Length: 139
View 1 (cartoon, rainbow, N blue to C red):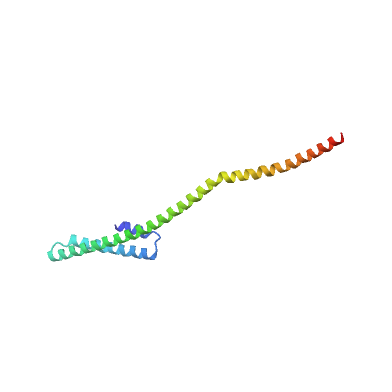
View 2 (cartoon, rainbow, N blue to C red):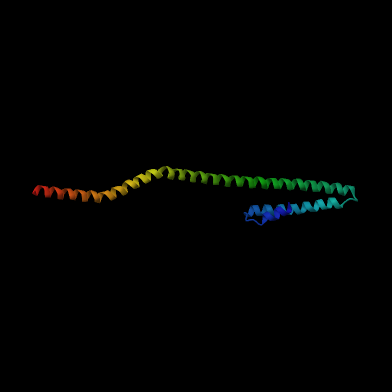
């Protein structure tokens, strides 16, 4: 647990989270010392019982702190997950709109291109018809 707390304190956290991690690391150290005292005190039964009780209370406190940090981390991860899912849904909608409107846009662009290409041809064809009409009148 101490190694995990030390590893996590190297991350980039907010000052509140950093403070909680430092506090957790201190409690882990104190708990380790209490367990060590329980294991080394064997001569005095009353002192051993007091040390065991102290170590048990420190362990419970440590578990409560870790549970609190887990709940906090879980809620922040839930918020971030929801935010990412919302962004994905928005991107899906935009992509669907683009895909759905693609054929319509392609048709409009094709119509504009064809109209632009055929307009000079129509002028040329009309001019040719006028010329043909003038030559027939003179025959």
